[in-house]
Image 1 (cartoon, rainbow, N blue to C red):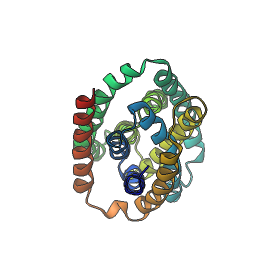
Image 2 (cartoon, rainbow, N blue to C red):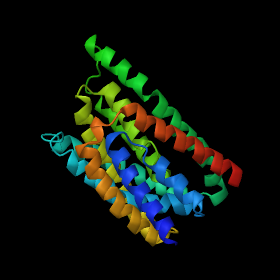
Image 3 (cartoon, rainbow, N blue to C red):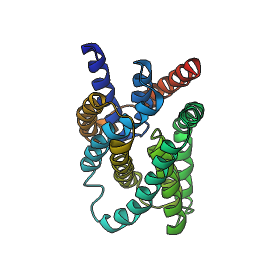
Length: 254
């Protein structure tokens, strides 16, 4: 790896860690960067899962104040996240590589769409709450959806945070910042579980992992401290542009 490639991967890790903490979808930054540098989609995904795990943990720690008093609920939600992550990693490692390369552009496209519609979803949720139509407990449905997102996150991590925030905002009545704290913990669980599996039985680039780990850890703290002050449209615009670039890159290479 050339020095400039290492610098690009590190900076991508910082940016991804920041975006993951504030919005989610940091993988839409790091994944296309790694693919553009010549790594296969599978290696890029596995290295991402391991390398960004410290960043998601860092972001969750940064949101510790929003997590106060939610220990039991977070622990309960972490179980389906972990189980889903295991299922997702099994899918990634058992399906043929060409199947992953076929599905990834679709998944990236889905992630981009979710990022684009997130403001409308948030506005709809806010209006429902003002009208007294916010979700109740609905724990069973919440746990099931967390499990499904865990599967998706174990297979391909992009936009799992957006997915979590979308449905938790619809089904739970907590303030969105408290939900964002939960989202960061659940994303950390998925990345850690998937990363542990990948570390032992999947193709991984350890130099990439090290650079992403350091960068995303720094980014996680930046995201927790100043990320919420950054203009959301700017962050969202960057994610959409990078996501579209990733789709083009994957389709051309495919």
